Image (cartoon, rainbow, N blue to C red; front, side, top):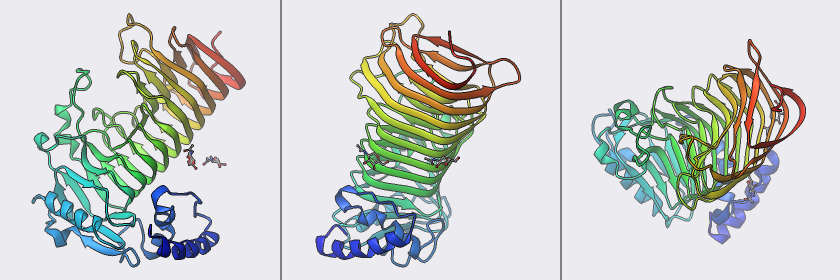
Length: 424
Ligand SMILES: *[C@@H]1O[C@H](CO)[C@@H](O)[C@H](O)[C@H]1NC(C)=O
Ligand SMILES: *[C@@H]1O[C@H](CO)[C@@H](O)[C@H](O)[C@H]1NC(C)=O
């Protein structure tokens, strides 16, 4: 749909559809003029994105079985997945890689571009994909990687199961700062104009989803599920990326539900439920030299259930200088959360280390309510060398006993209700 002539016709058709459908979002989409991906409209008409469906109108099917994949979960189907992708990526019209009903085992798979196919790539996951559990098969950062693709959509109601229970014993990142992370289940690297929706990610070896060096990524109606004790299994990690929207997603895991790392800009997170997990965090920042700033983060209408943290910002001590700013945590419900509001600039650091040089400013916490599992509902440990600049509006966090705030090096403007009472 990037070809001009055809595009013009498609645009007209889509405009009509957009007028008819309230759900049609009017957003430009870079290289594909938005039209292809917004083809969401057409897609919904053609197929039930949640399930299999006939796939009418979704372009030519490149079924992994036709490329040699074997269901049953025993045989290795890695090469079949890659061949199906390569064929679709170089096809000249709309193309859809299909992973049908059944269980398919694969090791590292890279869906790599750029594609000569001018249309957005579709990957329809209907069945269950399970990971091979030999650590030597994962030299890179991902299990299923999408790399250097402009225009891609992954959907279909199926499951990526990282079989992390076989691999978590190899994770030493809690004790070794120079450790190598286990691969992310779904790694988007250098991707533009991507939509990930109606998918299940379970028991990832490392992060469930890692979005890096990418632009314009939307994640919707994804379910992420791993045990509370699984190590470093962040739900979604974002770094060095602009315009990432996450919505209607439910995350249960052993680490941060969502972590927003260096270089993340214009990130919006709406209607996410988190728990078990470590909350929604900006950070950790300041671990590496020359990190990029974090700017423009909105976390709204989210619910936390029994998590260790709620809304959190964390930076290492002894860090390089960077900024985290224009951050809003809004309309959040905390159910029995240990640290509902938490800034920690000595994250994982020695208390005798030099204070962090990450400047946290223009951060708003508003309409945050519910219950805290510890008496310190608000805990702000900011850096002496870069005090935090924060706004608190309508905070109402209760427990069975008294609740308190503690603050170090924090400048806070308070408005509205404050339970716990502000720091003096
Ligand atoms: C920020 O993201 C929104 C979508 O959430 C988008 O419409 C807007 O163009 C983005 N702004 C910038 C500066 O990238
Ligand atoms: C958040 O939820 C409220 C209702 O609880 C709704 O009015 C508002 O539009 C929602 N905001 C977003 C950004 O989804």
